Image (tube, rainbow, N blue to C red):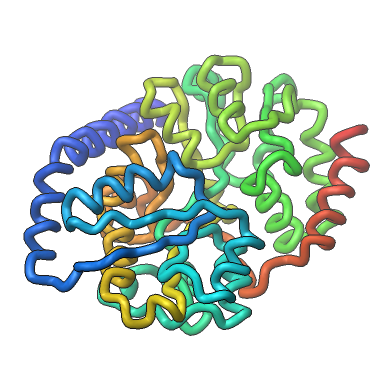
Length: 343
C-alpha cells in the first residue's frame, strides 16, 4: 500500500510538471481562440481574495487577451454594499459572500458551456454563481508513520482507532474559516453533541491547535506530528515541496470552502465578464495559480489538477443554500472552546 502511495505521488508530480511546461503552449491556444472576439473594454472584479492570489490571474489574462481585469479586494460586507450600489461587473469571492449576494438578488444567471461542466453542487441557486475552485479539509499522514500502521484512517471516526501514542495536530476551529467550516459541517451531519464528544476523545492526543492552516501540514512533513487534519491546498503544497506526506480524503465526506464567480447586473451586457468567468474554469487559470504555490482543487472535472489529485468517488458534504447565521456559528465555536479546547 505504501509503495503504491509513493508511486502515485511521483505520478502526480510528473503530471503537474508536464502541465506547467505546457502552460505557454496552452495559453497561446487560448489566445488564438479569443482572436476576433469583442473583448475591447475594461473589467472590474470585486473580490474577497488577497491581492497576491488574484494579481497573477490578472496578469496572465491580460497577456493572452489584452484585457487586464481590475481586481478590487474587499471584505464580504463591503463587497455586498458595492454590488448593491451597482459597482463592478464580476464578483470572485468566497462561497458565504456569494450566497449572501445571491439572496439579495445581486447576480444574473451565469450559464455557459464552461460552467455547464461544473457539478451542480458548485452552482448557486438558479445559476446565480458557479464555483471555480475549492479547498477541502483532509487528513495527511507522515509517510514514515504510515509504515508503522496496519491500516490507514480512512474516515473521521477511524482517527479514534489510531495507536494511543499517535500524535495529532490541527488548526484551531476559531482560527480559520476553513477549519471552522469542518466543525460546523460535522455538527450538522453527525449532530452537535456527538461531534463535540468525538473531538473530546481526540483531545488528549492533539499536540497542537495551530493558528494557521499551513502549520499542521508542516508538522506532519517534518515528523513533529503523525496524523493531521489539514486543508487540501496546504497538504498538496507541502507534497509538491517534497515533504513526505500521504493525503487521505475521508470516505465519509468532508467540508470545503469554495471560491466562485458571479456576474452582477452591471455586467449583464459585458462579454468580457462572461469570457473571464469562463477562463477561470480552464487549466490555464489553475496552472497560473499552482505556479504561484496556490494549490486549490478545481471544480472543473476535466482539469488536469482534478485528474491528478482528486480522482473519483470523493465525498463532499452538501452546503445549505443560505449560510449559517453569524451568531449561530459563534455559539457552536464557543461550545468547542469551553467544552473541549480549554479542558
